[in-house]
Image 1 (tube, one colour):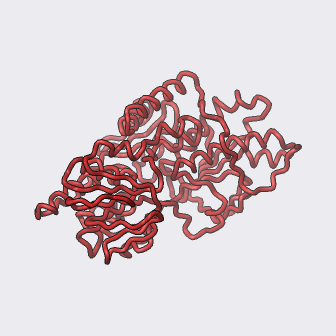
Image 2 (cartoon, helix red, strand yellow):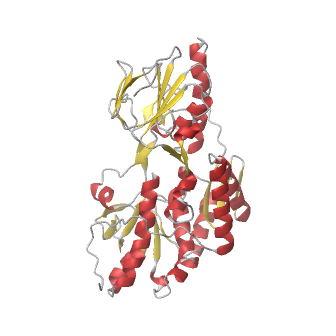
Image 3 (cartoon, rainbow, N blue to C red):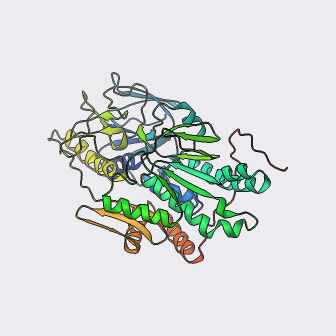
Length: 429
């Protein structure tokens, strides 16, 4: 990998998400050599991915170059590579561009989609974990409307304009709200010769309420906001299959649709050779210091880590805040390890959770306060804007939001690269 030798201990970080970046930033100019590995050369701000998918933001405004993150570090290196295997016995990481040895290993590979073993759903549905996947959803959305104009088969047209989102966590709820606002304010102007009332947004949730990790008050408020926007919500409904044309559920409900977006579950993203102390969600079991069970020099952070405790019987929520807080503490603990000092235990500071449903509509849960509406929407915007990396990105996102708010528009509605699943769609052409 052409990483120079160093007299400082080498910390190899796998993954440039919230956890990995937090460690790298906190170790800036400390007595360590930091090597950050990721298959992309940028860090993406995943909470705003749905806005890229629906044309509200350009992809570059939520991405930040890895090399820029560490450019002022005294001894930090980045390599764009795919990690293939971890060899803990010989303390090395094997990648598609070479092998690197470590003194300390930080596994921060994040999460991947969980289809619960259903291969048909995995093959035919869309997901939104990466920027390319978000752009695929945007393209499919626009292509479906173009195809709807070309067909005289009304059933086919309705299927092309039916968007089904499976999973009503923050991602599913925010995506459904954004699509509903496009139906109301954008598509009627873009497609005046198309009956936009045929467009449907179906949100399917296996549980008894949407946003099931949030308070009952916030869940009810979000449900009302979505219904007011015209979103059809199906609770206690389990999807059993999707063949690319029809989605089927356990209780017999089915839809003809050419766009199913899967956000119903996530699991840890494993690497071959990763320590096999995995829980039921493929997350690595760690102790209160984020050390992988059986190791003192291998750590797991964020979504891929399962730290159990009295308050978190199923581990910490797979969100940005636990990842960032674990990353910050680990950097401090690495220094303590080198100084032969005792380590600090990780205690999660739950700052709350939030979700936006659309213009002037959001829900916020703080530890002792729950509120929704316009003020919650401003709080949501401030928190997300403040959390973005880079002044330029903050500026781009802010002005995009201001423009979209006053003009009722989403500028990024261009099909840069085609994306069509292999489906038999009858058109007049």
